[in-house]
Amino acid sequence: MLTKAPRGTKDLFGDEMNAWLEMENIIRDLCRDFSYGEIRTPIFEHTELFQRGVGETTDIVQKEMYSFQDKKGRNITLKPEGTAGAVRSYIEQKMYAGIQPTRLYYITPAFRYEKPQAGRMRQFHQFGIELLGSDSPTADVEVITVAFELLKRMGITKVKLHINSLGGPECRKKYNEKLKEYLKDNLNNLCETCRDRFERNPLRILDCKNESCSVIVSNAPTVLDVLGDECRSHFEQVKALLDEMGISYIVDTGIVRGLDYYTKTVFEFISTDIGAQGTICGGGRYNNLVEELGGQATAAVGFAVGLERLMMVAEAENGKKEYAQYKDIFIGSIGDAAILKAHSLIYKLRQAGIIAEGDHFNRSVKAQMKYADKIGARYSMIIGEDEINKGKALLKNMNTKEEIEVSFLDLVNTMKSIL
Ligand code: HAM
Image (tube, rainbow, N blue to C red):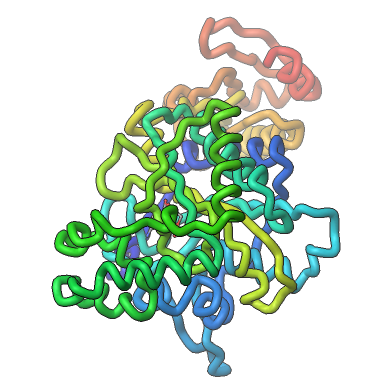
């Protein structure tokens, strides 16, 4: 146990970490281009925030939250997603009083007690964006284009955009009645969870992975059948703008999302390349959440991408990346005085932004040079007593083996000019 990370978690280091940093750079550049500013909210929040925000009837709240009481008996939960915290902060920090819309993004760990498998973790990471303050279909599409552009910049092509509309509260009410009417004769054939959902949240039955439930709902009426004029026109405008931008999509009435806060447009980007956990990105409009959490009624739309899944899809399509290691210079040393000189020069070089390394093991010169090779040093220098007396040493180009004599005082400038 002591040397085993908890189930469903993962250490990131080495080349995999390098690939993650590259992915995060792509995300940060993307958010700059689309004017989204970073927000960092706490890893834990009051449990009530998620119960209210994500929804009491969702799997997340019912089964998957990492909740505990702190030493003062407060109910605390590790965030299972990023939206509720971002919205809490939007209200608390009065972001609505600034220039609108508010555009936020986050890269955050998230925690769900799920059964781990490839692409499904207990601690995973989300990149998400939230656009608050506008109910325009153009905002829905802006948000979709951020995800679309991310996939493009990651070199991912084997992904499809699925969109649907869940309508507003009125349409949902009408739909719930219609769906219940359709399901009522088949109630006994639904799984236990769906029988429970029948009264509390019938829409979620459409998302059940249980074979007999999916057969039953395959011919169910869809929300699109009952959309009111405003929601219908909103959805039509979203589609028209996607068409105009040349972004292809599938209207998929099975996309109902696993969180309760959605209204109108919902969407997912689903990989055709990796197996069961193919949903890389999910999101949509949530016009009632800000008010539900105690703010003024505010329209909003956003999405989150699972970074583990994004990386899996990128690697499935383009292969794992290898990162060559290199250093600008290795400075070796023989003897006590030389050790001091070498390490103080290394510090000077590092201060000037030159990647320098030295010996920490009292290795032989031969072993030090072997190490210089291993770490990909482009230049090397060995300092001994002679060199200290002269105040100079030979600087060797490790590739051409050419050597030039350089005074210690000139080393930083010489390195700067040759790199
Ligand atoms: P979500 O669909 O629950 O939406 O999660 C978004 C993405 O997080 C998923 O598509 C998936 O890639 C990733 N994900 C979820 N659970 C796991 C897991 N256990 N292991 C690995 N990856 C996972 C939300 O969280 C919403 N907050 C999205 C949103 C933002 N809607 C509006 N704004």
